[in-house]
Length: 618
Image (cartoon, rainbow, N blue to C red; front, top):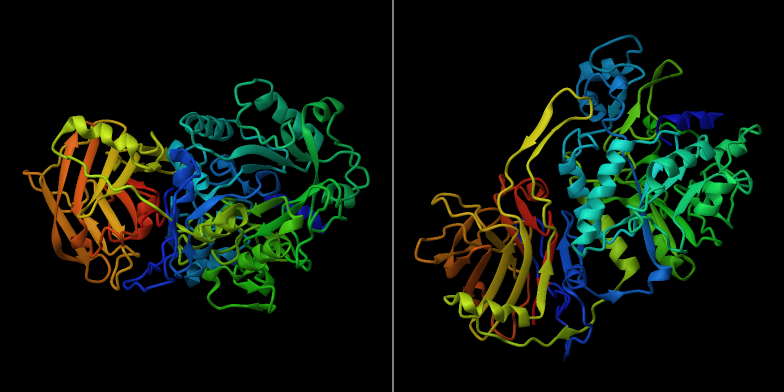
């Protein structure tokens, strides 16, 4: 796809009953489930964590806890994934941001200028807008680790690496594979990997095999739902589904017999090619509702898309906007709500019994080449933050809306909703006795977080013009456990290394953010613990007065035993009781801008990341 598309022109948990508001006020939501039942799911901590993820996006849309997985063989989600950022520095002398350029007259003039100019060069890559992680390079380990954590939490089954242009990006691909293996070995159900080829498909597949598949090192990472590693490309059976075979009668770069023996080959399906319903897997559809490819059970879901009239996103057709609603055929002014994305997901839910595989386009393409398009600037696959297919978090007005929308819909498609509350065994924890840490082995509410993703950042941007640095990494949370009794709520927080000593002044040392559904909150969290710890083991419990402003609500206790930190919080300080103890929470450390919820994706440690929380409650 990318620039070459121009060629086409030729837990013991219950679902939280309250609604946490993402602004400065909350609201009471649905009533809790009526019945309490014993939890017989026998989930390990990894599955328990996934089932009990929850949260609310900036528009107030909920991510709910789940009960278990639907039939796995018929519900898988792949995500179109790019590894090319920073790998074309010979075509990117500087960072050019189209959204930023369009914001000024000087920038608009530079975009329209087809002559040499420093602000916007013809033939060079431009970012559609600024990603939340900056104009990053896909060889940056800090970025890739966060991607893997975010997409594992989302429940993505596989990443479909974009290799459609006969380019194989060894360095970032090996980094991605090694990062996935690192966290897979910890026990996390990380996404698997496959490749999508198109231009010179046979040659590209052979390159990919030689680079990555010859060794058995990554066998556990390959997406192999039918036994053999899957790959998408072009064989003699393509049936003109690809633009390469539909518009180029002389195309003969077919996948070799040897590669067909090794791979589970599916056919490249282009939105303007003939339909190959038997073997095709589409990355995008220009039809609505999208076509279900019955042979593979596959359907595409895109954040936005080109139109049949033009492949240039820079034409800004209504139906290429993130805000286009297919049902009403109108473009909404507030495109940050993702009407196009939701319309295409609705096709999945309306045809769920026929769909085995959803291919989401896309996560992180971000860039396109500036072309001379009939004397004006033209960009094919992305243009601005409104006209782009990416759902990775943005530094722009859409923020993390599209990531959270992805999480909501993937969970709805793959997981069964939780419909009953679970019984809890109450337990009293002796926080003053280190030997009592063994008690925590017997609690049910155990949550896992990645170990080793909290790292320093020091890597060049996509153009190689400066380095992104971040040294806010401090305490790396790996395990959280929780239990309560008649009077107290207890937290157990384990870190990869010994918990750092409190320096006597930081307000962002090992905080716990808690949502009980109060009327005033910061991003849905109405309580924060431990902004003001004392040397005697006492610490603060504070209630939001609206946004990131807090007032005293009581006093809790904390203890540190090596790499374990314990919290003992009076239920009364949180307005809870032993029989009404439903919360959402996250544990954070050294968030550098604690009043900005998007910074919980970026700095320090947030378990879980960003707006996501874990649920607990009776």
